[in-house]
Image 1 (cartoon, rainbow, N blue to C red):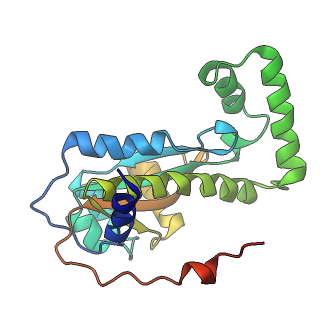
Image 2 (cartoon, rainbow, N blue to C red):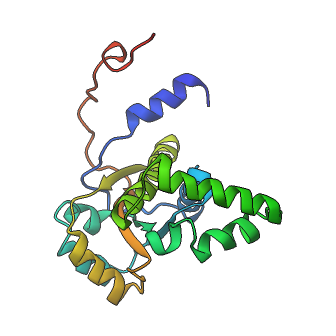
Amino acid sequence: MNKKEILEAYQFRHACKEFDVNRIIPQEDIEFILETARLSPSSFGFEPWHFIVVQDKNLREQLKENAWGATKKLDTASHYVIGLTMKSPLTKWDSAYILDFMKNVQKLPEEVVKGKGKFYEDFQKTDFDLSDDRKLFDWASKQSYIALGNMMTAAAMIGIDSCPIEGFNQATTDVILREKLGVDTEQFGISYMVAFGYRVVEPKEKTRRTLDEIVTWK
C-alpha cells in the first residue's frame, strides 16, 4: 500500500456501533487480523497477552449482561475478541514464565538470559517503579493495546470494521472468564474487548485536532 492508501484506511476506521449480521468475515481474514496481534511489539519482547475469540451466542449473551458498551456489538459482530493481559505471577521479573520465555521462545544463550533477566529486574524495580501488582498489570496492558491498535488498523486496510470496547465491569466479567471460558484470573485480567464485522451505517466525518495542535518540534 502507498501512503495515500494507508491514510485512507485510517480514515475508514471508526468505532462501528452495529454490524451487518448477514456478513461473516472469511476465516483467512480474521486469522490475518489476529496474526498482526501476534506480531505486535512488546516490552522486552515478552508478549504479555492472550486473545479469546468468542463466537458462541450463549457466551456472548452472558458477556452482554456486564458489558454496557457492547450490547449491539455482541449481537451483530462477525467476530468478537477479548483481549487478556498477563498479571504479575507471569510478568514479574522472577516468574517462571519470563525465564522459560527467554530460554525456549527467544532461545537466548544462558549468559544472555542472565544479563537480560537482571536488566528486566532493574527495569521493574527502578526505572518504571513497577512495585505492585496493579502497576505491573497496567504496564502490561499498555502493551496489549499496541496489539489492539494493530488489529484494528489491519482490519481497516482490508475493508473490515471494528470497535474497541472498555464499557464493561471488570469484576463481574472476570467471573464469566473464570467460570465459562476457563481463564485463570489469577494469571490473566481483561484489558479490552474488540468487535469485528461490516458496517450497516456510514459513519460521520472523522474529527481530529490538526497536526500543529498535537505535535511540537524543537
